Image (cartoon, rainbow, N blue to C red; front, side, top):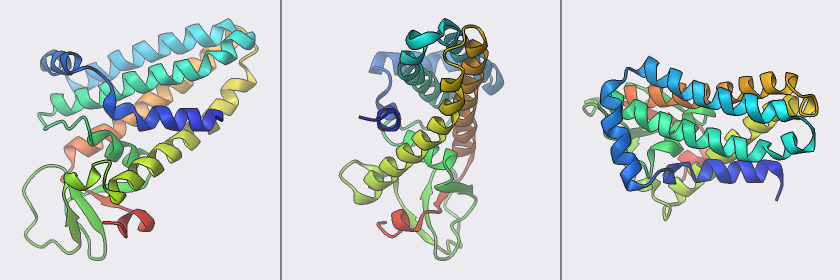
Length: 219
């Protein structure tokens, strides 16, 4: 399995992050945070991880790239769900991450209504009286749905492509101790920042509108 395939698999499984106990603990914990405070805490975790693994250098440092990305994915996913709790939204661990990744990879965008000819998914708020496009429910995102499966697979693939592009720079300096740590920490922050920004857009939005025609045609 290639590096990109490994990373795509990491993204596919982000909706399964955390046990039921961890999820309940996260919801309780978020009562004491603002979005900015929570983002800062998430960044601190992945910057420290990236600095440590990147500073090792040599083949050991390069071998640590995939586990480090997996750690960033976990921190980022819990960070995304945490933002949902902070904003007082209903957090759907099974389905929200696919839509957050769709926003991050530009497969979808947030909107206050669904334009004519487009397919949208309701996130929060009241239904718009003049809905021009097609509205589908979150139930279509279940793994048994062609629409949901395609969205999940394509979002994970596109997310992996974005990360691999960044990792090219990381691998290039992975042999250099200390300097590699600075680059690694920066990439980790970039990854988690992108996920958290997409999550905030998602949980603050009314609908997400699918931009990818291949996926939209399955709805």
